Amino acid sequence: MNTYHFEQFFSKHYGESLDDSLRNSGMTMTQLLENLRLGKDETLNLAGLLLFGKHPLAHRPAFVVKAVCFVGNDPAGEKYRDSEDIGGSLRDLYTRTMSFLTRNLHRVQGAQGFNVEGKLEVSRVTLEELVVNMLLHRDYFISAPWRVVVFDNRIELISSGALPNNITVANIRSGVSNIRNPVIASFATKELPYRGIGTGIRRALAAAPGLELESDRDLNQFTARIPRKTQ
Image 1 (cartoon, helix red, strand yellow):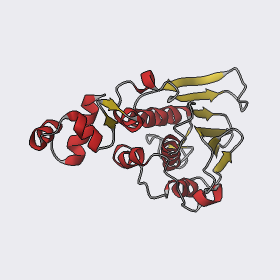
Image 2 (cartoon, rainbow, N blue to C red):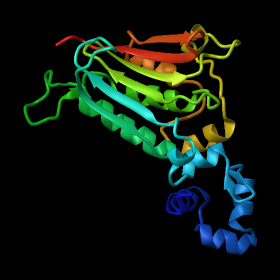
Image 3 (cartoon, rainbow, N blue to C red):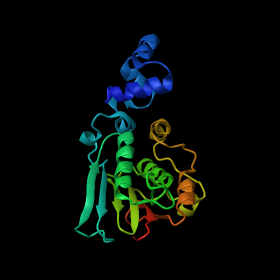
């Protein structure tokens, strides 16, 4: 467990230091983690591992973001501009995936002054909402990585698990959501730019009307596809 990360999280959101809380309550660290539904019998569960694990990949090697920026538009292409395997806690996965995307997208100067940094070609709101959606709404029982692929004409964010039978793409476009792991989702509201009220996809669509969403039951995966303007 990444004790420093957990201590910082705890003091920020519970109003007292972890040591003070344990001393005042008489609880052990093991009991506290069990009460928070992050572990049992001195072992972190899936939520605890992904949220506060020190080396999550050592225990769940498939929970990595495979990020590639290709030259061209062919996923079978052999030329790429950038690639990275992104591991760590959910907070780290989010931060580093956003960093990968923003460094591989163009910035548009538009009418802004010479000394002002150009705006990202894709709204940051769209990127934030879709990266969070990708990380949180995957099927955690499938042993496969997340994938972020940047092509010249599009960006694809792919997570394992098609939408459940009772949810459709039309549903999520209108704000219906399905939480696969409630414990992870509850902590994500404190660790990520995530509200947990089902408005993320709608916010992404408002900022990127050309956004395509695809739930593929044959491949058992969900894809968010953002078009790019060709330069």
